[in-house]
Length: 330
Image (cartoon, rainbow, N blue to C red; front, side, top):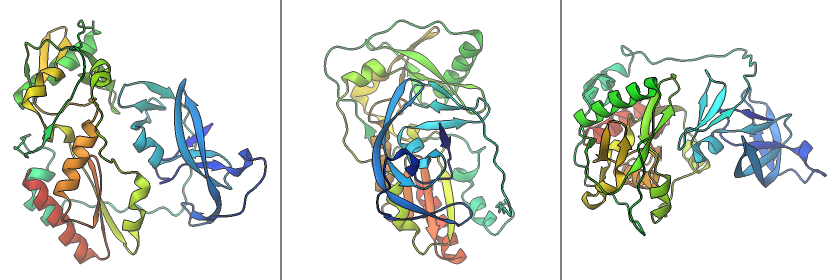
């Protein structure tokens, strides 16, 4: 069994799995600042609910194997506490688990309220920080291309349970209103698929597996969470930004819009903005974020998450404002 720990930056295997103990190679720190010896790394394959996942694990003297944030981010696995499961975001597949008891001593959590020292900055950029701000998508000059081989893929509309049908109709109406999709006459068609959200509701998207098999890969680098360790050296204050419906900020190339068509019980629709689930969508978005954040070396960008790291409070305020100013342009 594995312990799923989103607070662990690195996935770790216990040395008890080894026949003999190698020489120590370093040290990591637990949440209570205690030191744990490490013994190099090991490539391993693990099976979760019948699917194989390959990963390079750190070896350390710990009682139980840990799946950390690096593994979860790479495989796009979401922790669903309500269901006590991991959700494969790309397919909606559920990996069941159990809830373990965790006790914390001397914990301290600092919340930033709107009337805090950062409130004035957030207020000045309410168009990008307020959850109630209207959804608008500007022309960023970035396009998502879908280079395919072979004939168009087709599918028939899947039947949906009443609750899923209501959720799909409601979401598609909102997407049409926001200029994300439009009715289609495409010769391409992928079936609709609904992915469970953490709050128990449903998010409709295209089941693009057939299309993805016909799509040429984009080899642009999507970083590993380990890559940002050097950014944290000497930093003492941090903020994270989560970009809402991030992929929709990228437009689909005009010649490729028809390929995104999704067939539903209530019609055929195609995406004008980049949808969830397409092959290379992560690469397109990462390329976009790397471009617009290039002038902000104090940030680490992983798809729709941005970490801001600073050495002082005054510097952090400046960094946050600079990033929000950039976001406001897009």
